[in-house]
Image 1 (cartoon, one colour):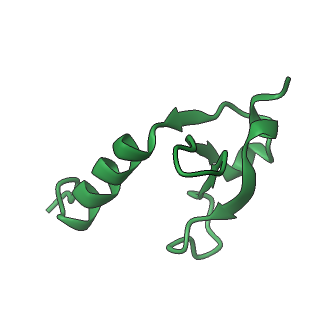
Image 2 (cartoon, helix red, strand yellow):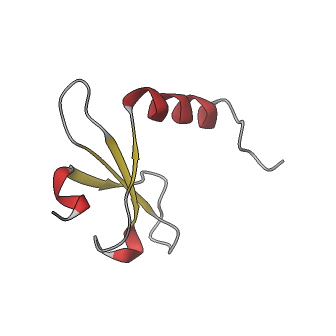
Image 3 (cartoon, helix red, strand yellow):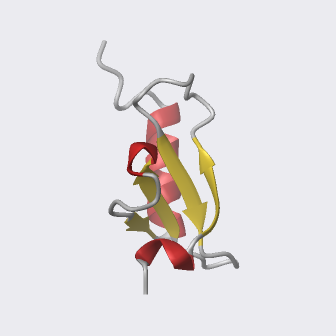
Length: 71
């Protein structure tokens, strides 16, 4: 089974402005669904990173808190 097929409703990052550095995010659905992240340039044929909902929430919270800012 293609690892992308278990995920539904892939969507591109809202911060993507049409450039080449884009990611897409999807989930397997349901309250305990796994979150998948892939490179949009691979057009669905590349690898998918999978995260539990709590891992994904921790990442999003860290981004919002500026933990990955370069400045």
